[in-house]
Structure formats: C-alpha cells, structure tokens
Image 1 (tube, rainbow, N blue to C red):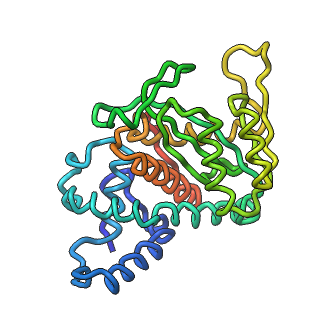
Image 2 (image 1 turned 135 degrees about the horizontal axis):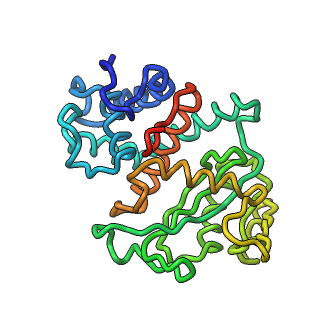
Image 3 (image 1 turned 45 degrees about the vertical axis):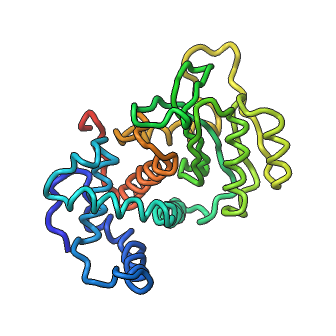
Length: 279
C-alpha cells in the first residue's frame, strides 16, 4: 500500500480501489505472457499511476517528474504500454458505466453528443500531423469527442485541425457504433454536413443538428450540446491538455482518457477536483 499522498493529484485509497483491479490484472497477464516480465516488479502500480496522472494534471514534461516518483523512463514505459494495449480506454469504459449506474441511468448509453475542439500544438509535434482550422485561425490539432448525455466520454479522435468536423465525425461514429450498440441518437452543431447525417443513418443512428440562434450574440447555452462543451471544460482542468504537446495523436487521445478517468474517480468517491485557482 502506498504511503500518504504528497500531491493533490495522487489517488486516494477510495479512488485507487476503483482502478486497481484492472491494472493488477494487466500486470498479472504481462507476467504470464511476456518474456522477462515475470521477475518481481520493482515499482508499485499505484505510484506509477500517480506519476502519470501528475503529468496529465500539471502539464510537465516527463523528464521533470519529481524524484519521489519512479524514474521518468519507467513511468513513460508503463504509460506507453497502457496506451497501446487499451488499458486507459478500458478504465474509461468501466468508470463511465459505474457513474451512469450511480446516476440511475442504464450502464450503456443510448444517445451521444459530438463536438470538436481545435487546439494549438507545441514545437515537438510533427508538422505533418498539424493543420489549420481556418474558421478559428488555429494551427494545430483538433480533438473530436463523443460523449453520452452526462458528458462522459464514449470515443475520442485526434486529427489535424484542418480535418473537417464532418469527416472526423464520420470516423468517430464508426468507433461509437460497434462499441456502443444501444446508441441510436446523436446531436451535433451546424458544422456537421449532410453527408455526416447520411452516414449516421446507415449506422442506424439518428443524427440531429442543434442550431444556434442567428440573432444570438456571445456565448449561448444550446440544448443537448451544452454537455459536450462542459466536457471540454473538464478537460481544461488538466494542464497537459491546455496545448497539444504529444508527438503521436494516440498519446493525445490517451491524455484525454486519463483526464476523464481522473474526473470520474473523483465523481464516484465524492472528492473535489481542485482547479488552477485552488477552488
């Protein structure tokens, strides 16, 4: 058992209990199948996970991890393994179903909301993976997400910012459809074109555009769509997501899964999420 948490981002006992079975099962599988992985582990999984969440929450580079965590090379190795083997996606799905059950909902969503967020990139992101969002005048990447009606993540796709919402949304629905068979309704904004709506129909999903009032000025809360906007707000509590620092889009997607894992474990245990203003 890990000692007292020295950082606000570290997992409490209650939060660790929610995710420990998945990580322990992953390690046991690794030890039984991977050559050379059967020796006694040197680092506690909870400490490793604390270090990964610390990076996501604070936005630091891996090499700047505090020395009371395991070596950054070790932490990054675990992060990359969990990213590539779908562990973060599995945890996100498990926690989402638990939150939905706690809220009195069916564990499986029947409707989703799609939206995209263009974000600037750092200097280490390859130019080939970037693009320009002409409408928002942002050079970087675009985060395309699908959430349930509680704002919980169903799927994420990171693309160049130049990729149209309808194109990315089509690929996103192709993820949602086979993984969430109960989803039969989707809400989007006016940036999603008719060919997206037609593709949704071929998947058995009724996609509906929620229009913005042309006379409205400034920020306006839109029915149904406000939940996905709130999700982007939740993500922004994690400084690693204030800009896209990741060389690989898959790493960007994993950081988004991590932010939602952090959010949902706190939600399930009733713990506050301190934001940048310490409130």
